[in-house]
Image 1 (cartoon, rainbow, N blue to C red):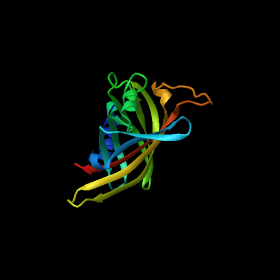
Image 2 (cartoon, rainbow, N blue to C red):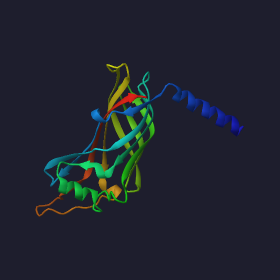
Image 3 (cartoon, one colour):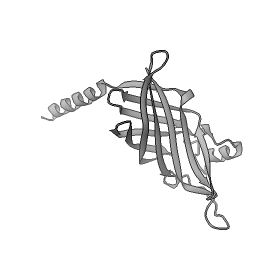
Image 4 (cartoon, one colour):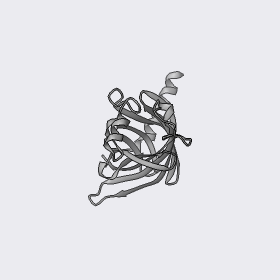
Length: 192
């Protein structure tokens, strides 16, 4: 009886993936960005320049069947070299020991051209569940006849959960770097 259940599960899974196509990230039109509050008064923005993703997307239902991403922590860019070097150090990403942070989707719930993507985010070897809001899911044929998909992932994490704990207290109260980090990833991908 167990083998019949396993076969049925495999058929259901393969049917669900049958309509999905694999997409490759278009680096020129993708941005892996973040924002964090500095000195309690302003937002500092940054991005990661090197990343990769595996995307299985069903164009007909506008549903993600699989999504996983890997980001090189040493590719961080906030526009200030000294700050970037600090972010790569043991105070934050410890890029030498933990060169990658990863995300693996566990489920996706579509709602028109939006949805919720749940999965596991790993930073500095620490894995925590996160939920990203997925916005503006759209697909088109480009000028060469290729299918393209575009979407935005938005979410928040507490950097302390991932051992990114460096901070200093301000004389008037508060801290130099907020604990909350807002993530905004703009993705454009081309069907293989």
